[in-house]
Amino acid sequence: MQQPAASAATTAYKILVVDDDPDIVELLEYNLRKEGYDVATAPDGRKALEVAQQFSPDIVLLDVMMPHLDGIAACRELRAMPKFKDTYILFLTARSEEFSEVAAFDAGADDYLSKPIKPRALMSRLAAVVRRDLEPTGAPTSDVIDINGLRIDRTGFAVYQDGRKISLPKKEFELLAFLAASPHKVFGRDELLQNIWGNDVFVLARTVDVHVRKVREKVGEHHIQTIKGVGYKFNLDN
Image (cartoon, rainbow, N blue to C red):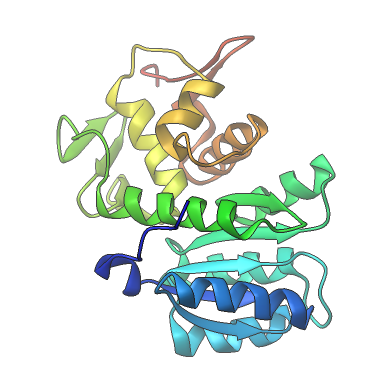
């Protein structure tokens, strides 16, 4: 079946491909440009940080094992820069061990895909990312949630605690806002994955645990309660 032509919206998206294998870079660049994306490349993590500053990518495809600066470290440094806190970072790697995947998400990754790369599957996944970004699902019940000492501004993607602004990457913010919108309900990991990451992104349930831990580190341990054997809920008790 012939692939649909890239939409005008897709062409606005810039993708940075970071891999030390020139054959993989060439393969990805060819397929991405064919779909209408604007593409830049880098051969290692250190160069990727330089290119990212100039190119300002919407999406980064990042290998793990690279010279000079590996993908995990590069991801962590990108997330530390305010301009890249919402950039979609997808790891493409031959490292399929669970600890590598957990380390990637812990560094701030949004998705993780094992090599060998299947271009059509990757293009479908990227199209889903663009589609969800342009057409967010589910209208919020309120633009601002004031609950348990937190002020969550859905429109501005901002969280405040006692007047102090707390910076959260997009997925961490979405997770906190989703739980806070239904503070009496317990959500299982699969349900959270479906609502926050969507059906088109294939990540481990462990991803939810990593993001909950990172949110707790920033807003406080007591806001998200673990319901053993079930999942998580927003805690109304101070």
